[in-house]
Amino acid sequence: MLLIPCPYCGERPELEFVYGGQAHVARPPPDAEVSLQDWADYLYRRDNTRGVHAERWRHTHGCGRFFNALRDTTTDHFVATYKIGAQPPAGLIARRAGR
Amino acid sequence: MQPFSALSLLKAGLSGQRGWTPQWRRAEPKAAYDAIIVGGGGHGLGTAYYLAKEHQLTNIAVLEKGWIGGGNTGRNTTIIRSNYLFGESAALYDHAVKLWETLSQVLNYNVMFSQRGVLMLAHNVHDAQVAKRHVHANRANGVDNEWLTPQQAQAFCPLLNIGDIRYPVLGAALQRRGGTARHDAVAWGYARAADALGVDIIENCEVTGIRRYGSGAVQSVETTRGLIRAPKIGVAAAGHTSVIMKMAGVGLPLESYPLQALVSEPIKRIFPCVVMSNTIHAYISQSDKGELVIGAGTDAYTSYTQRGALHISGHALEAVCELFPMFRRLRMLRNWGGIVDVTPDRSPIIAKTPVPGLYVNCGWGTGGFKATPGSAHVFAWTIAHDEPHPINAPFTLERFRDGNLIDEAAAAAVAH
Image (tube, rainbow over all chains, first blue to last red; front, side, top):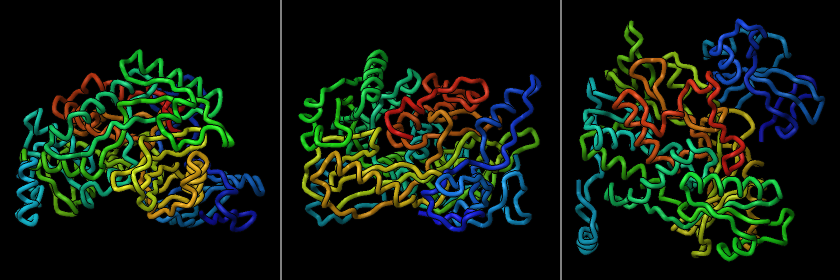
């Protein structure tokens, strides 16, 4: 079980958290112009990064707040956390896939 | 290739088991092949075998970054069944079961396929309705499956605790043609048979890049053992498929999770079948060595660590102890994780890609082992003909764009 660093509460056991999937997946504008491929990419396509991955977590059984995290998916080490709406800290994503 | 027979085994036994030769050559990579398969698990090795055997494509190589069968082929719970809900899935998985039934003879290699029956338990009204729907759908598709009462289920698996349990067993679906096989033997058998047909099996050869022509078509793969050219590249890299396909600029609807399994200390033959429970979530069978083989769930988050969290396997063991109280004092010998590539509809992708000459066989998620021969067979067809076999035609990459999902997410018989 992981210890996850909630930016509001500190390190807590994994069981207190819910994983929210890849971060920064932007919803295409809700108009008729969105192509099927763009919509499919938004719904289904994921970077599935092997390396430092930007992702959302929610401290459901704690403060209840969402936050973003950078986690190395080859070690499960949490590299950094940052606020929802913010961009990931520069220089920490070594192998960010091009979307 | 030395053929195996009762006579050859007897002779080797009488001469102290000396004189056996390696089952496949230790091939050095050539500069170019007619086709390259990336991934030396069961699916990749099987694909190479069927390419050579049925499509006369023998100038081919299988590239494996570690040792063959060292990934998910050696990390699963070896369960084989074809009782999927939808017609497309039933056709694909039953194609595999039919190939399993003759595989040992075809490969001249004992894959220890045992049709001991797969029993899937229902613990509440919803489970029972879903299971019965599966039974009817399977039978309509020509796949055997039958509904058992709790007493019939217990008669089939006498150790099963049907009453003194938090969620009593209300019945079960039984696929008698389902069962298990020896996972390593599948990889070794395909490797040996493919090698005999001239296929180069190249271990310790990691693909680090895919080069393409200006036209977009594939040209070659960069590997830790040099550049290898091929006009056709088939990727069967399981949990690492996203990593490989990114090298060719192809994004996929995949997420990779650790999926855990455990084995107990070996005990005498006691467990006659495979039992799966979706609701309280465990699956269990007994290997021919005597170990109980227990499957747990996936972690909640994507990862490539091949570990998995302790509370996930603990949960599966609690379920096993409820269903089979006599196993409570057994010790677990080993547990491990495999990295499974999960699609949004929990169905695989066996298809051409937008890149000419690049083919992908992925997205098997938590249940790829059972499909190994069928998957390999239709993937070889797809690579050889540059178009899908009728069985894998629905399992495209474009189905996610076009809304033609094969949504086994709720329908597959295991929890996801």
